[in-house]
Image (cartoon, rainbow, N blue to C red):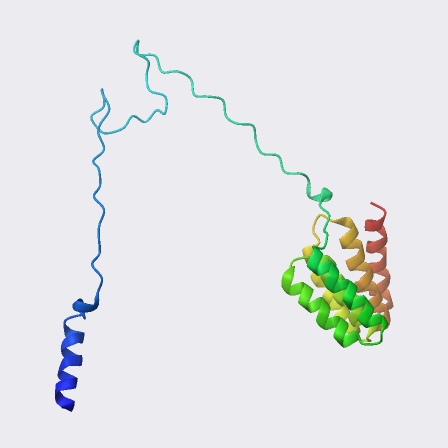
Length: 185
């Protein structure tokens, strides 16, 4: 019995299990009809000549799409993230920074590219005494805040506070200078 089973398995492998494959349907292609006066196929001009043989000018190109300058960009939180941040503020004020961190991390799963959430997370880490993590959150927020001077300023401020708490006062002063320059914009 075992030999019979092995023969069936080997036979199936050798035949490519054709009996288990779905048939493949290949759609028919319609041949391209050459246009009058052309022996190689469709005309290369999108505007066919008029009966008197004149090729009309192509239509004018559409105006270029204008994108607002990056400096006008401003980040906002969505409704769900706003609710989670408000909850985190209550939790942090109630003395539970770890629960506040968890709430903001939930918001980050909703809006992972929003620098405002990274700033919020950094501030909670800072209030909990996690200064290294707070600085990292500030750098992450800075990466994401391109074009939003307010978010960039808040990121630099968070970085400055983190550096100051770690007695890196020279670097902290430079980060604070950058934050002040951006907040003036």
